[in-house]
Image 1 (cartoon, helix red, strand yellow):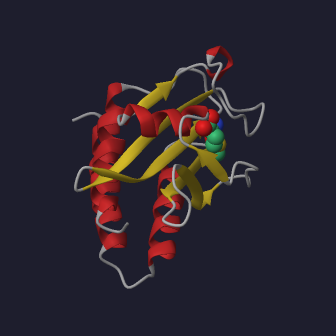
Image 2 (cartoon, protein in one colour; image 1 turned 180 degrees about the horizontal axis):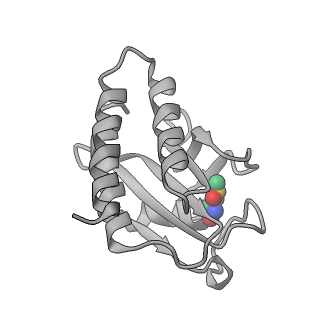
Length: 156
Ligand code: SME
């Protein structure tokens, strides 16, 4: 088994423990962000955007780990996060300088992956990861992070 695969299995197990813990929802989401950021070297900013029950067609920033961002609210369709809601699938941008519909948080960010979180077929949030490494995201990242989002879905 590859090192990366072993790490994925270990992290999914840790995430299940966080989900089943006594922490409140925000504490669990924050704990998952920290776990991912601390253990995967190319995950430099890890955060959740959540759908907003009070304002339609907008995502609101939830718990995150990394530098604070000015993008606290993102309308559907705007940026990589907003596009991922409309695509209804994982959106990987290996080189953000080539993406015209992009909301920059820092010039250090070179690439980004956004994974929608579904509950009963509806998008309830997204996991957003920024990387300072160019083209770092593999099929293994996608599969792993989609599994993370399936595990997180019952929290939202
Ligand atoms: N870059 C995102 C905005 C959110 S930050 O990455 C935290 C986007 O284009 O939607």
